[in-house]
Image (cartoon, rainbow, N blue to C red; front, side, top):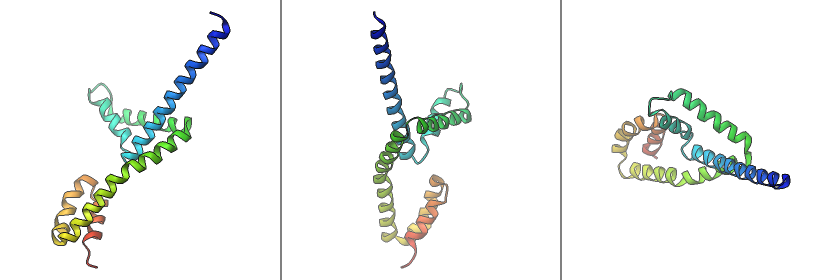
Amino acid sequence: MKIGEIVRKNVAEQRAIDQLKTADDFVRSLANTATFGLADKLAAAGSSLTGKADYDKQVQKQQELSKAAAERSPTATTAGEITGTLASVPFVGGALLGAKALGKAAPKIAQKTLPKLAAPIAGGTAADVAAAELTKEK
């Protein structure tokens, strides 16, 4: 094999690797945005399930990988963020519409039960505010 052929082959391989990294950066950004920033923690939890990896160290590693992705591929990560936002709209919109319908249909029930049901899921902050907004008299 001639030197020129070897160089062309190495360049082609490097381009393929770069394209895969860019695709991975896009997907990482999309996942982090669509999960409201939980993708790194979910990946860390998956890595630490075996007990061989420390969860906190895995979270730090995943966050470093996300930061490196943003620095390496700013266009791909921005596209991933936009796509992740658009992907999450139906879920957020559907949840808000469902909560609004519940609030209109049964304000007293929603006022008493929605914060109790949603607080453990959402940490009690956004759910309490949403329930108060949905159930207040107009």
